[in-house]
Length: 322
Image 1 (cartoon, rainbow, N blue to C red):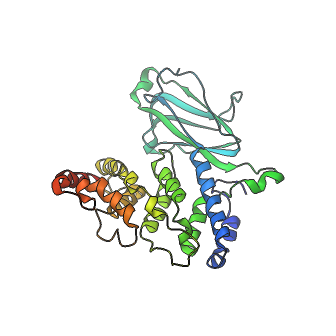
Image 2: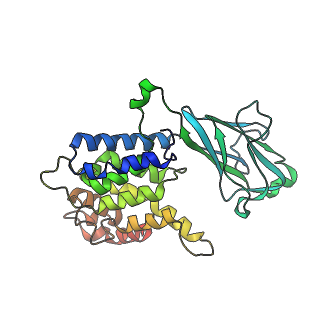
């Protein structure tokens, strides 16, 4: 099933049917599912591209030059404009399937993407070509355009290679393991991949990744007889602190509802659950992980045996992260 997580319900149902079996499945099997899910998520991170034009055109690029994206292994691509796009009355961006095509698959003309009419464009195959028109003169009134090109479906591999390809159900698999065999997710590689999803500028799965990571931080240590090692002692939780910049940015640019986007709201909950900001955060975390996060937030005074001299600077750091 090719789909990058966008296939039908049958694969999802087949995956869910494994749930009752995972609690008594061998550790090798749960680790195999986990590693397959991480491979799919890593593949997705490498299969998203940003293109821009107008004011956002990269330095040195020509306005008349077609912008071409090729993602090997894709069966279909999705070209999505950002809401902040806007073009002047004569400006237009056209999406084609290849360099030789004369009829666009979709176009965006004038105005602002926020006003509607800038629908995503699906492209069959592994290549998309964007051409802009009328971007000079009156078109300068618009900010320009910026799009995200991602894989909507992966091509089905040949029969002999099918078993070497990850299932396009990365996040669903992690969620299933979180429900049925959560200790299998307490590895360093899980933390690294989830953090990469949160940090990626084009990631579309930030809320799901954030929710899984938040649950893992609050998970009690595995039972003594568990075959899975709790590696949270090696998680550098301070690497989550830069997410506060995204929260502040969205907080300063709220819409009429005055609500943060879902992923920014989850970022704030994740940051609030870190050691140094929440008295409950250290209940289940290994001591070394808790100390590392506290020192990053509160300064050297938060280290075991630390002096109180760093408390002032630490309070400022904690306030900034919150």
